[in-house]
Image (cartoon, rainbow, N blue to C red; front, side):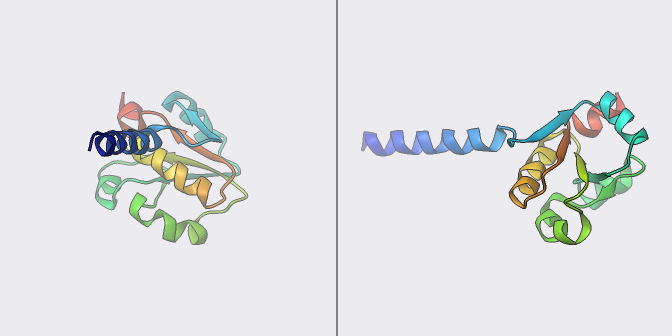
Length: 122
């Protein structure tokens, strides 16, 4: 019985580790660096993965809203693999998850904004 408990704990820790570890090959930038990226936006796609309501409440000009729960379905239609994709959300967690999804879908150039919109407002 003890082995089952240990196995459950190990599996739980593994899944938590996988959830919070950044995806390989994803660039991470600060909101200060994002301001420079917005001025040099050739070959870049800016995507806000928050909900439609969050996006309508406050967003950065130039960012397209593709909610995280729709990203897998819309990525092939809405995004180009030839351009860098810059992702933002409220705190950086959803955009980190979105970066993992896009990497799995074969998008080579993915960037996550650390701290998200919270950091942008400060």
